[in-house]
Image 1 (cartoon, rainbow, N blue to C red):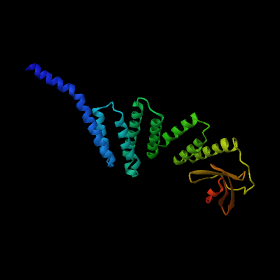
Image 2 (tube, helix red, strand yellow):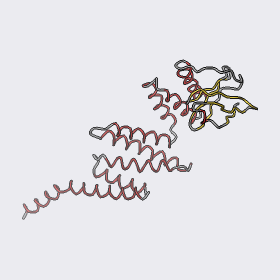
Image 3 (cartoon, helix red, strand yellow):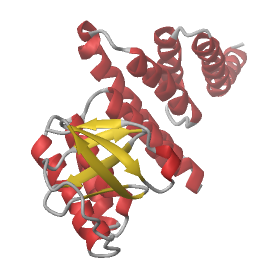
Image 4 (cartoon, rainbow, N blue to C red):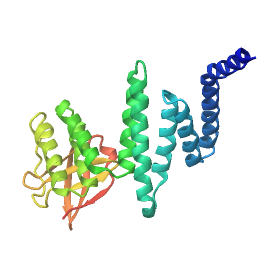
Length: 246
């Protein structure tokens, strides 16, 4: 009789890991259903419980990260900022755990990880971390022209106008003047260096030289009562807008 009791106990212990795994997977499925229905906090609770039962999981961290990210992206109310930061921290940590635990991350996996990370940093308005990311990328790829504008725009979003202007001017100096200097038509020689966003392009006006350059090439301009009308560009039919100068 005693040996039978011991056998049952041993059998129960041996079956426990399998039961735990089944329970964990059930929780993940329930969390997935909550996620699909937009119940992100409930999904996070299920994923967290599943992780406590099966802490060496991989995909469950991706799932919880996506749920936390969804909350971050939808948190626009100023009163929700503290909670948004907590969910942003969770999402950033879980995406990293997922990526670190992949046996052999593919380039697509790494790209997804970095894209999600940038989206979270941007949604949570983490200016310093975004600047660090882009400046580090620039240091590794100093000849990538687009990074100059990206860094300038990021400084601008962080309300650091002085640094933004410096990076806009760096792009002109390094690429548009030194590498491929444009011709200099004789046009109105007044106004100040300005930046304007039209279709996410950035335009520059150098009053001393009398020409403007944009991401799609040289732009000729005329000045009429403080308003500069873009008169010619490459392609010429794209510029039908006016830019105010100060």
